[in-house]
Amino acid sequence: MTDLLKNPYSHPQDLGKPLPAWPHATSVCMPQWLDNVDYEKADTRVTNDLTCGYPRFIYHPFIVELAEKYEKELADPGEKCLPFPSETVAETCQHYIKAVSNQKTRIHDIGINGIHVIIFPEECSQIVKDFWEHSGEIVSSRHARATLDSVTCNYKNHDAEITLKKRIAQLVDSDSDDIYLFPSGMSAIFNIYTAYQKRYPDRKSIQFGFPYVDTLKIQNKFGCGVEFFPGGDSKDLLNLEAYLKSNSTMALFCEFPMNPLLTTPDLETLTSLANSYDFPLIVDDTISTFANTSLLLSSDVIVTSLTKFFSGVGDVMGGCAILNKNKSGYPMLKDYLNENYENNFWPEDCIVLERNSREFIQRMKKINNTTELLCDRLSEHPMIKDLYYPKFQTPKNYEKYLRQGGGYSGLFSIVIKNPEVNSEEVFDKLNISKGPSLGTCFSLACPYTILAHYNELNFTDECGISRYLIRVSVGLEEPDDLISRFNSALSEI
Image (cartoon, rainbow, N blue to C red; front, side, top):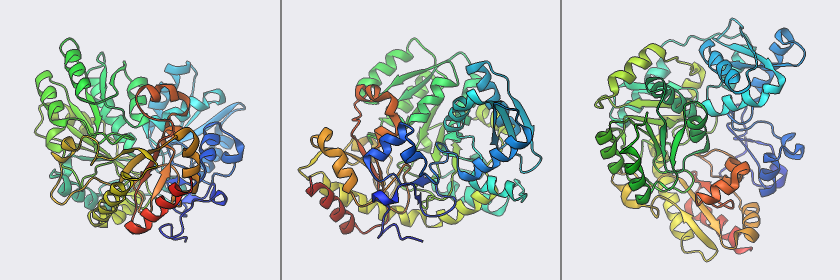
């Protein structure tokens, strides 16, 4: 296997290679700026070369194979199939299709591993893909491969699951019984959102601060709307309190810190508002991680993508929700999950994630150190227009929740000077692996706004997020090595 620390996939000939170069990779190389633009345009020059992709955005080849198998057996002309991990998830997708298009669909239990196939008119393909992406309620590549091979697996509490939940519980000072595993981080958010939405069906949610794209899509598409405070700053705190004085909310969602500008919300004030106005606070700590920050006491629920830094390898999907038993809303949420929670986290994925996360704390210490050294250097570089990193963006809000020995984690974003002219050149020359996702043990960069918001660039401009922003996830390379690579790309402008 290619050593991506020393020999990253960053060159034109690397287009479409899996990152890492394994069958269950969760990222794919798009090494040039234009590759990312053409991907968003669905240009076959790029799409035909992609061997895989981030599994919520691009169906893994094993998912495609499973879908095609049952299309041949079950679908009529003009129909398509897609597998889901349970009957309940398939029914939820069915309701979504009905609500959006009023089209009829069918569900078929294939009789192995909980998989239920939904059969739908071909013209609904994008609607079904939207549900797959936004909800995160996906069949993993390992789940699909086992099903294709007629290999069954028991979902009940197995050793890896017990160990994994104990590990997370110890890190966040929680009980294992209050940790719920999901097939993706977005699935954790979707399920927690659904719990509160069913409790308060006539209330909007609140999104405080600009979030990762699908978090906002869930709130826009699956309930009665969202009140959005994109800045997530002190001005928005005043606007939020004014809103709360005359409006009830089902829940407030925020990230700590926010993606991609790495600003940290004033969680202390948000907690105070949550107590005063009696709403639950759901905090996504995917970027800061359990290793660096302690957020449970200030949250009703922590949601995390375990796919990212916690795994570190880039070969497995997973997510979790952690409940705070000291909050007044805990009994309602606990009762809901006791009745409705489905463990759709495929056991083989759990085994891989447990193995990957054994060195999580040690790995994060190195990543923290390298990222801080790199960002300190880049902050002084004459070609950097803007550098977004928790140490530089609202550091007091972040540092209030730092664990002993914790750091600012491994994600930052930059905008190059004269970005309209220079961004593409710098990105193309930067010698680190390039593709979607973050948190891998090898560094990873992408033109984030292009990938996440290509069809709404005016909206992101209004929210203060440059369309030329480059997001970087730092891995385990040596600091001097990474500094040299950035200096090289920046010096050639």
